[in-house]
Length: 414
Image (tube, rainbow, N blue to C red; front, side, top):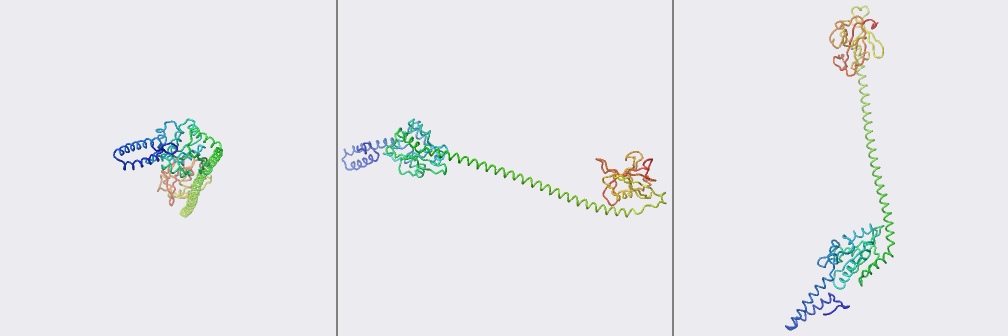
């Protein structure tokens, strides 16, 4: 059987032999043809066995393998001892390396068979060495994929890989997150386990300083990010405080506006009431007319009205006058009938001998028992005292009560 270059049988050489044997088989006699057919079957068997021996662990050309599930595929082919494979995209692997302050070790297989597949296989077997496993896990994020797979093609494009297999070291620059090639292994021949550790060690010795720079930059960026976060938090808190202050000022302004509106409304109501009181009292004063003449004393009653400020006002009424005129006179003098009641000095309403004029509506003063000289006190209504029994004066809405009795002793009206 023809041998490939360097004494190793390659798939390409086997394919060529198979093609020549097929042409020989067509032109041979019957016996020779049977021998050729048997040999062709042997070649096919060798091709199948050799192909499975050097085929890629990431996937074949028919089933392209990506980085997902790579650990399981590697374990089925080479065993459970291997470095930690990053299962994700190339971009995600380099981002993880930046966070871990490490380089990314990128391994892309050719999956083409022959010499290149043997290189794939040799590198993969180096990954099972304990020293290699320990070194990679400590210092790198390992990303691996089949070169022809979508994940591998993406990584090849991003790394600028010119040929496969590809074994390179990538740095993710902290300042701008750009990717930079730090080291590239030619893979011809593929590195042994010892050679791989030596290559990675030398690379870290020469290029490892940039990781310190990245570490410093990451720390600076973290500080800036924290400061920005604090500023944002402070700004949000300031906005919240401002909003609370604005809401408080709005509430205070609304309360002040309401208070001012109520004050103005009260003033307007007071002014209107004052005008109405003045007009009503003027009309009542005119209606009261003059007092009865002194010579008519026998037909008159003299009433002394003591006001809350201590003043006393006196007036004579005809005995035939209605009791309502007594209320009109008190109203003209400024007594707030709604808030006051009238009672005879020294005798409280409800006591024996008291006369409640509220119960004497429609009667004359004489019929109500008001004769001679009478002292009437103006008193504020007691707390909780209702208007029941009160009497409305003509032309006004107030109510008042009068309790009066003829003067006795010290309660003289004189």
